Length: 83
Image (cartoon, rainbow, N blue to C red; front, side, top):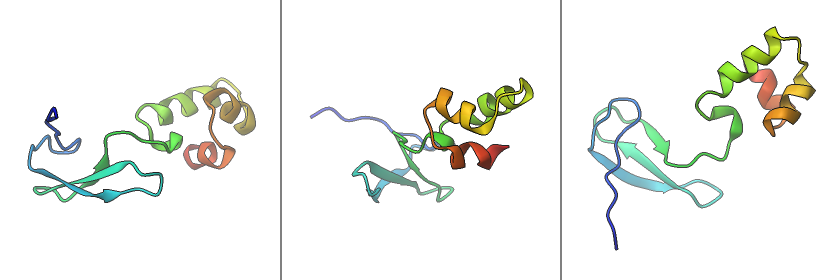
């Protein structure tokens, strides 16, 4: 079995341990230094890196909430979080 070095996305610490699973079964991890809980894979589209910038850019270009949600393949309530 191959081991993977996991680092905290907030503080870049390698002091990370497994902290259970989310409802979809993906592993969650917790940093021993900053106590941040994170996942390696995210299924919640509105929290993926770069989504906020895409939503903001589409809003400035005149796209509505439903059009933005359809384009980014996410729910409209996730889009309205950032507008």
